[in-house]
Amino acid sequence: MSSTFLYKLLKHSKWAFAVVILYTVIYFVCLYKKMDMAMFPYNNMYSNIQTNELTCYYLKINDQRIAYSHFMYWKKDFLEQSVTKYADYISQNKNNYLNNYIDEKIKNKQQNSNIKKALTPNVVDFKTWASWYVSYAGMKVQPNDHFELVKYKIGIENGKVAFLDSNVLCSTKTQNHE
Image 1: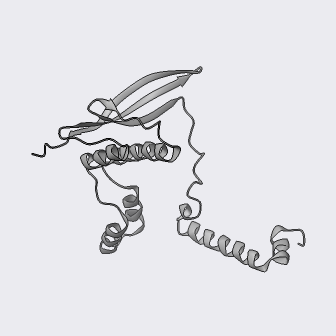
Image 2: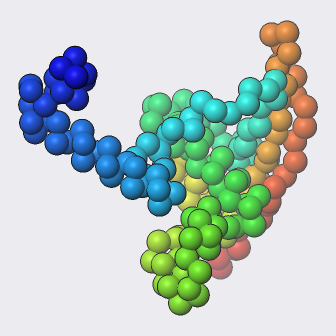
Image 3: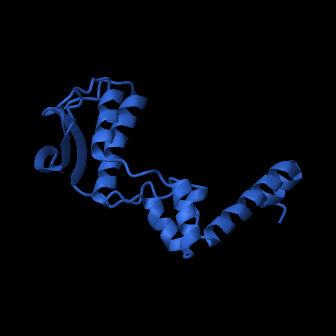
């Protein structure tokens, strides 16, 4: 027993031992309550099945793709993830994953409604989101601008990249403000 990690930790620091035990108890309670993402939000990070196909998204304004690769890594990553997550949101009929989780866990309709109202974002229409995205990318939104959210697939085989497919998920025009 004297060679176990927890025993050595207890002898070294009772405070650290208490933190480890408390963390473990909280983690098991979260697992029991099916809240496994609470402690390790990236625990599913590498469990995706690898394929030779890659799905990507981009936003076009007036038939020009919005470039974001020249930004610093944090802004580039934010713009890239924003378009991907909004495309997922559109493909799920503007249903947030948290709505599904709350529906599964809370059966009382009044509680369900109150929790959704407090925790989930409002439905965001494409025009509003696209205008925000364009302005965040440093461009100006003009009257009668045309936005398109495009999904495309590329394939990678034998070190060569091939364009496989693309389709427009949604498109809109801004209103002329006169």
